[in-house]
Amino acid sequence: MGINKVILVGHVGRDVDFRATQGGTSIAKFSLATTDRRFKDESGNPRTEWHNIVAWGKLAEICERYVTKGKLLYIEGQIRTRSYEQDGQKKYFTEIHADQMEMLGSPQGGGGASREEGGVVAQSFPDDADDVPF
Image (tube, rainbow, N blue to C red):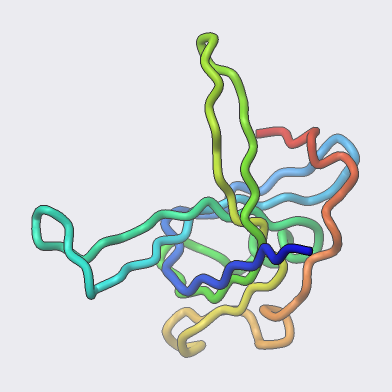
């Protein structure tokens, strides 16, 4: 038995890239920055980690509609690693596959979707997940 669960709270780094697989399943991708102010980099700035977020189905559609650069989000999901070849070398790519998303902050401050919409649980990952168009 194993557990693969990640919880992130951070700011969206770029607008959502929204597409559909050949099977018609919606997929949304965007980056999320988490900052740890307790630790500093060489320049004295807080350490920031960048996470690649992937959402599927209904959750992807909600992300496409409401998520924009700068929004503060709560994300629950699983860590997934995939690989590809580039110039004869194998490269690895780590993503967070979101199961749940909640938009944080006040609605006046760009919080966006209601709690009911933001808390939608994504459907299980599609069988054609290997057929991702990007």
